[in-house]
Length: 445
Image (tube, rainbow, N blue to C red; front, top):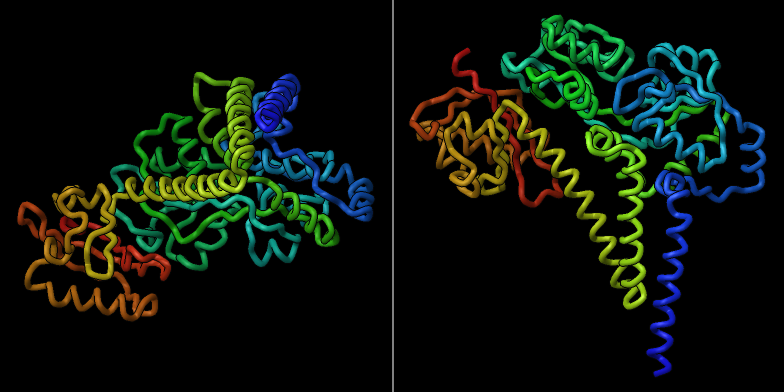
């Protein structure tokens, strides 16, 4: 009886505590969800932060959802949300310096007019001018064209074409050196880039997928498509003036302390919840707060009975959710591509097949998944050559990669279609895929 009484007493205390938390939880929900808990600081670090409490923070008027000016005049978006978390963790109240573009802001940074830049991509010029934190945002860069534009597999197919790029951004800096035949059209922001392609002023626009999706939805653009994925990506870091290495260290610690839940909350709000017509910001936090409170109650109950089991379940759930999100993003890009994307295992069986592959070959996923690719779509007279090339790729790995080559496929209807193939060897730790191939239908060229 004593042990049972103690058990129910503990349960009662837990739920009384949760009830008390409800009374103050709503007033503190923004603080809790935005990760405003302070990090541990030494006396020297505290003194330094107190002396530089009002440092100058540089931002620019970009595009939603990454960074933009809201209706109330404040800077909003994914980047400002991360920066707000970092500043609050360090107890800083920075003076915000706004520039019309990143190029203009970078000139201010080089002139010493700002102390911190909210988001900087790594590069020789940037690293020489400022200290950079560890990257805190990763965004793949894609190519967008009109729906009626010819098939492409990458930047190499855009020689002689006009391509819009964000002024001062990664594609603007790297394309002239790596693809000199491309005619660049620098634009001030993502909206102008999308409009340039939509109006026909540019053949393509190269930018991050998150922003492109948001801008296209905002302006109701329906005649554009993601044509290919580039080898570029945005890895955004916080820029700190060269003579403040202590702040670089503190920013890194603040970024490292942001939990996966906090990161997911920021990403979901600016890419999903904010665009929903039925929900506004206060209701979002009420919803998240209610769900969080329920999750906390459940977690406390589980910890009460078996703490070790609960920790293992939570760890697995986080890993699975992270893996699922990455898988869904990759799947979305693969399915939106207008080229055949097929992945084969080491025996030549199909493990990956996209919608464009179904359209071009006439085979559905159910008909081809798990079957031998070479037995189904490779013409008999080409079987030996194609199989030898596949075996060579597996044997030689990345060093055996060759330039694009043409090879026909036999469709379900018996038609021969000519495909321009580019192959990529899968990562060594991928036990399911050996080779991923990208095929462009050039039959009617």
